[in-house]
Image (cartoon, rainbow over all chains, first blue to last red; front, side, top):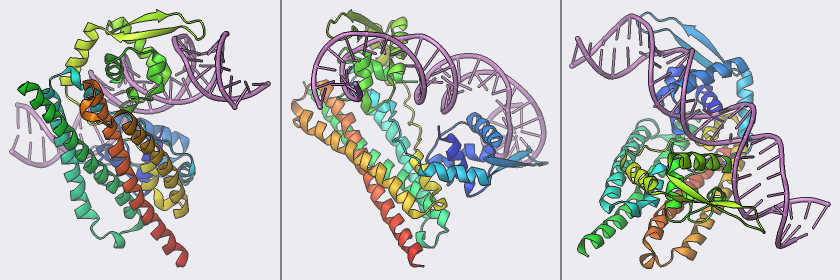
Length: 185
Length: 185
DNA sequence: TGCAGCATGTAAATAGTTACATGATTAT
DNA sequence: ATAATCATGTAACTATTTACATGCTGCA
């Protein structure tokens, strides 16, 4: 699929190690793709065989040696070509929605708790995103070009978490209403 | 993963064929899980071996024979148990965001077009959702219980498509600004 | 002493996609 | 004639997850 391209995009602005890519923090791959380190190492190996990336071995004494990967001219070309190709809508896969859908099978309180836990996680994520926005992207028009694009992907995260929380509030109030209906009858 | 549970949830309210589940229209599996028919047929077979669903062969003369699957008592129990278990946040995987992230590699016009195409698709999806809302869920409080829960998942779809479109507008205006900057200089 | 962070991987299993296959009916 | 709809599947491949593995450094 496009883990390949996610990696290419992430190292196109700045060479990185597989370990860095796996950490998913900062303005890297994490905003748009999730992958385990095992998968990333494998993909980097494949990308190297394909000639789309190269790496340099860095020997370290205090820490394990590492490989810094950079994109090649061919890799850059492949990435640019891919950008012009058709973009599919990401598939929907959300197990919380399965639970909500089947919600009448359990007591309202159960769903309220499930939703509350997810809300906490989403709210934390939003908070993290807003901190990144404040720290790194407050003066958007004087930012280097590639950071401006990275900011657009961060904005996607912020907007989408906010709207998730809106839905959660709507849903919570429905569940609370239902709960009180069931206990008063 | 949870295709199993998505199927259980979908047939818990009403027995269905694999074909029905694969169509993803209406108030079924499509709001929260996407899967090809091949995968669904395989999963149904596994679910049957596990004793979580049973099916009846329906012989038809005008159309191919079919199997109607229904959830078993064990299946229902398994589904209820699963609802109480920890819910993970769905992984982010959006190839459009990869393209935006690497946006400075191509001319602004390219990205504008890529975004416009996705916007059209998302707007259509939203329109479809709003039509379903109007047709099936306008009088929410007199709806049978399970439909109320289905409506919550539809609301998720509506809210999330709307917020996507908000972000797209923000992004489009950024790209247009950038485009005009590049052509005037 | 024990755990977190750095850094890289192999192996096995599960999940998901793509290609191929069949065959009747109904609508254009 | 051609395509779409109904309906179910197998086979091959690719993508992803989970479990296991190593070893050093610095901190509590």
